[in-house]
View 1 (tube, rainbow, N blue to C red):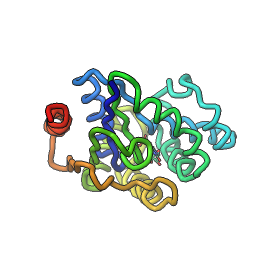
View 2 (cartoon, rainbow, N blue to C red; view 1 turned 45 degrees about the vertical axis):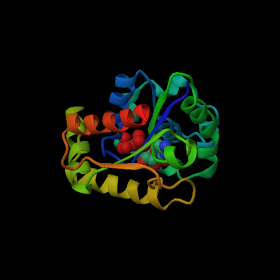
View 3 (cartoon, rainbow, N blue to C red; view 1 turned 135 degrees about the vertical axis):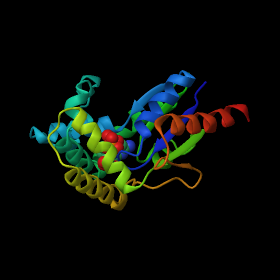
Amino acid sequence: MPFCVATDGPAAAGKGTISKALAERFGYAHLDTGLLYRAVGAKTLQGMDAVEAAKSLVPEDMVDEDALRAPQVARAASQVAAQHDVRAALVDFQRAFARRDGGAVLDGRDIGTVICPDAEVKLYITASDEVRAERRYLEMRAKGVEITQEEVAKDLAERDRRDESRATAPLVAADDAIVIDTTALSIEEAVALAVQKVQAVLDA
Ligand code: CDP
């Protein structure tokens, strides 16, 4: 039976970690939709047209996650993600994933608003700008990326602004989303809270 958990929110708020944990806990499939936009962004950095890249995307394009997590790819991702035709080319795949048998968790920016507006559970994961920048900075440093916390903060602010202000599918919490602010929560606490929210819907 299909059961969709839509997890949206700004960069580095914890939605990836929470989504992965939910998928594992409930046995659902997980799709990090940011990787789709990152893969398209990466192709444009190699000179390809963004819409062509989106239309011809194949699973292998999402394999090299480390390369796709680079700051310049994140920037390119948020630029191509503002293009209506790029988003349109990625809709069918995401909708089919959301409705697959056995349940699915999708994390992104527009899952609860555009991709799966009838999702059984909608979570909006957020955290303060400072905490998000610090988390992403530590993540990058652990991977050996040479970057300062100020640069990370600037990147995130720029991306948030672009994601929130674009005309097509802007980043916004769905009216019926459950907001989880992870600013003062540990990973374990944030995951436990999200698990509790999903379980409550399953029990209802
Ligand atoms: O991991 P992080 O939150 O930094 O970014 P991501 O989820 O991998 O997404 C990278 C970029 O892709 C975002 O800044 C958005 O511009 C775009 N994106 C989007 O527009 N819609 C989605 N469903 C997912 C990502």
